[in-house]
Image (tube, rainbow, N blue to C red):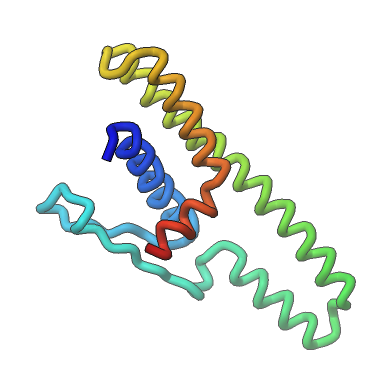
Length: 141
């Protein structure tokens, strides 16, 4: 495995951890070890604390009671989709900024050259844009 492949893999793992945490789960690590093998992902779905779960259940309940029409539900779903896409874009931008700061620090400390740092930033940007696809690919392995 090339050094660049390891860097891309590390970025993807980092993104998985961040998105896993943001999506309602937590990572629990054995404090006595410093390895990723000691971490496990805990999924709390369908815990009401998971963002959107309570709203979704409330919408379904009001729809069944006749308080919300099909059009109301469609409008709510459209709004929620746009809201989620906006949040995803914000998260991706924050992740990219954080990763670029790390890369800039590596360049300033002469861990890698400026040219390699720029190439790494480009690759991080590409991987962030394809994040869902990369997560699915990693989960299928």
